[in-house]
Length: 328
Image 1 (cartoon, helix red, strand yellow):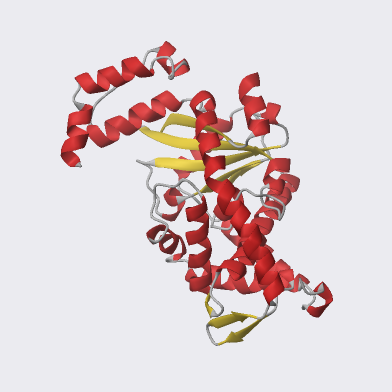
Image 2 (cartoon, rainbow, N blue to C red; image 1 turned 90 degrees about the vertical axis):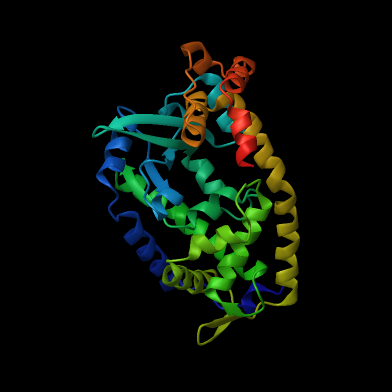
């Protein structure tokens, strides 16, 4: 890589612009049912904050499943068993399923747990895992926060996520193009690196769609804040990094792409043993898609793997697999 002194000096004012834009997003209101759900879920616990993100934020749907990340100072700050905490320490994050009645309707959510230290690491340059920074360069809401210091710490991680995403967008994007083209290239690559059921061609465009101005402003500001050189030709951006920088980044992406699916498979395997409330989540998904109500005993809720053969047999008796084949 060429000496850094040949590149523009990082622009502190651009970094301030990123922080201002993200703060304005974090404090935007969410439906009251979401706020009530989170307050009830947190209860007496004292996490640093709760972030609301994902498709349910982009297209509000309280009949679906909401997505939250709970950021804690220490893993014991959130109620979980010793084995679950050990698993979260080794391969974060753990995922839980929560459902609660709010104003006469059932609200459901998938909830991931991260410590602040894990959040910082997984939005930093040394991480080989793309999942966290790729999610948190997207719009999020801070729907619960402990205090001003916690809010600042979480904001710092979100700024890191944007910086990482913009850096990789320059490396993986076109030699020159619009901001949308750089972001679409980035999200196509991150989806391709993960074990995702969504199309790596359609889904990235859906992420950017409707937020083009936001992503355009963030990309240029993040490049300036990082000291990455580029020129603007109207709406077209042209990075002027040298070939050595680009090769080094592409080599780094090769490793991240190779690591992506094994990491996701490892998380799925871990989730089979640590996904709190997972049996209820699966039963709800089956009922939503097939209309079949799958009753769960308390034992089955606590030990879904042990009861899996019986649950599969119950589904077969109810005609679930015949219906699914009919739809296919």
